[in-house]
Amino acid sequence: MIGLTDYIRLKNLVLVRVNILQSYLKNKKTPVEKMNQQELLQWVESNCSDEKLKSSIETFIRNSPFESLVELAKEDWKEDFGRWGVFIYNKLHPSKNQEFGC
Image (cartoon, rainbow, N blue to C red):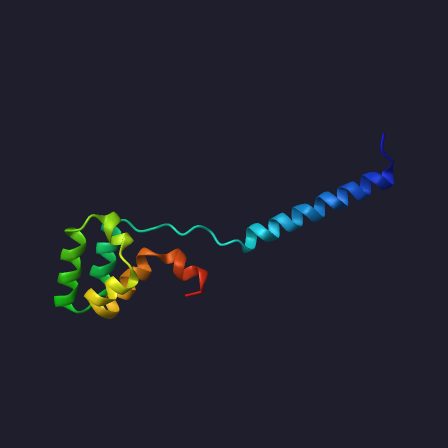
């Protein structure tokens, strides 16, 4: 049987550990959900105001396997679609941007 003093010490130790765990979970970044092909097309439709470029991007997205789009490097996106290519890359890889606070 443990005494009252030992019980209080044990209780305080547990509370400290619970507080540390709660603080960790509160500050931990939640996983970022990745887009699918349809969501990417909707995002381009809603955000790209250059109609000719928008049409080109949408055609490219529709005619490519989505997994291949995700695997393209940022430089590839930029080369093909300029600044909008970088925007799209960032939408496809939000966790990479989140790591650096972008």
